[in-house]
Image 1 (tube, rainbow over the protein chains, first blue to last red):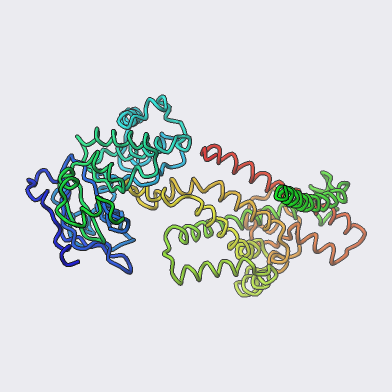
Image 2: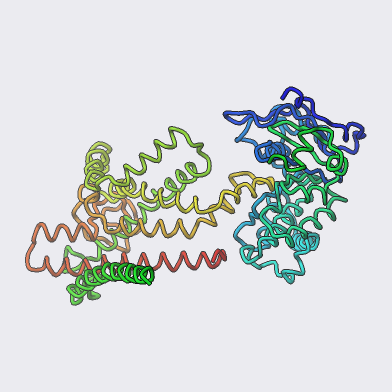
Length: 266
Length: 291
């Protein structure tokens, strides 16, 4: 295990500072009984898709949840996570503002059991006074971004429960986009969806990355290879290797990475 | 072949048992209503028991007590249900609280009544009054109401809370605008079912709200006036207590008539509650679109 403590970071060390969206320094995460992340140091480049891969329990979702403070109240996070010059892990940070800028999408589609309109209006109305026309204009924009506008024929009053699973997940994506985030965190967003719905989400993400930095946890290695620019491999709470996706998949430096990619353990 | 046979036999057996239960209830309710069918007249409903053969004040007292009880118990029950399902961590204290709720919900109502008598009526000095009755009924009602609200809140997936929080909304606002609205159909049926129990409760009220129904003046809106219908410190015999009293005191040939009629009203009101609860919660569910 000692060998793993120094992560193999061949792929990222030469980023200029202005291209970095998030920088984690010495991040440790402790649950009540065990440590889930050990001394994680890594950066997430702007306007790129970074995939976090690794077997179940490797800590990738835990790390993801640190990045917009979703671990508050369930785990102890230490270390610094730099976002635009401030440490977002600081307890003084306004988490409500932070989560507007750093949005999240979950494994299971979790729309509110109300209309599409309610789903999209809920977050933004908490944060700012917005006119009805401007609100509906933005709803249309985000629904078009996720290719849902035509599928629902522009009917904002349609009930979220009446959408298919894939449509629900895209509605959730649109819901976070309403807040115009800088960064999107995705926790296995397609693992509950069929291949066609997955492909639609992936197409959305590729289109979104010109404005948004995307960090995605996935168990689907093909998905990581298809859409991500960078990949980080986690194992038992350690960041083992981090590189450009094509380098990591084609020529992993670490034996652990190679074994995982080859399916020698899981 | 054999398996199909067993399947059919058990299915019919279960249907038979369900039919039996339904038949028993229908016979029971039918008998009660049939017995009292001649007693229920407009005069019966609008005459004070002080001056004639009527239950006007008892009926009002029952409804008034119910409203006061719900006003007292609803906020406490909702608050504790929210605290226990959303905020509290699983530890020894929450388990103790859960256990206390379960124990309280099986407390015999006469115990609640005697506690109310000793503490509220005598010690605090509220006397036999609507208020004493309402507080005693709150003790009686709280555990069941809390449990049904916990159930209603647990039926809302926790992922909703996470979704709301990830949008930068505070837990409190997600609770207020997403979780509780989604739980409302369950909350309402919980309220109405407990209302039925409260409405029919007698033992907890005999020594708290009292056994006398002074004639009320329904035009007197001064709540401090002794004969005002809104005065919370006057004694208030309810319908259920009235039925118990006329039967035990056996005040004459009319006792039978009064209790038969009162029983019909009691049963009909409770049935009405249940019916309305179902309609309302279906309506809200459809409006929320939850299918």
